[in-house]
Amino acid sequence: MRSLSVTLSDSSFNVIWRSLHDREQKLQNIIDEHDEESDEAVVANNDIVYLRTVRDSLRKQAKDAGLADSSFELSEAILDLGSM
Image 1 (cartoon, one colour):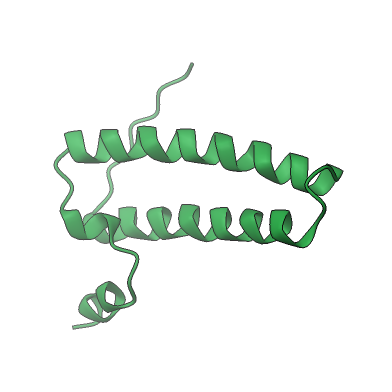
Image 2: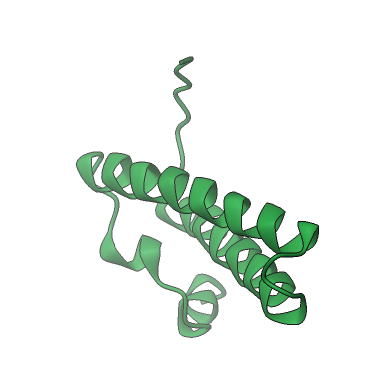
């Protein structure tokens, strides 16, 4: 496996974190809209499993790097704080 080092602010990480959750929701919507045995649902299910594995690894790395708890916030309130 390759390793990539990236320097991110808490707010930049939050954008990535939100994107992962948004993508998971879109995949879940695909599963909900299709028969569970359909190709679409099976592919979406596999993608969710992989996405969650990546997200869990990313969470651990971010916590180990000392990112603030607000970096993992999904509420819209955190976006309002960034504009102050």
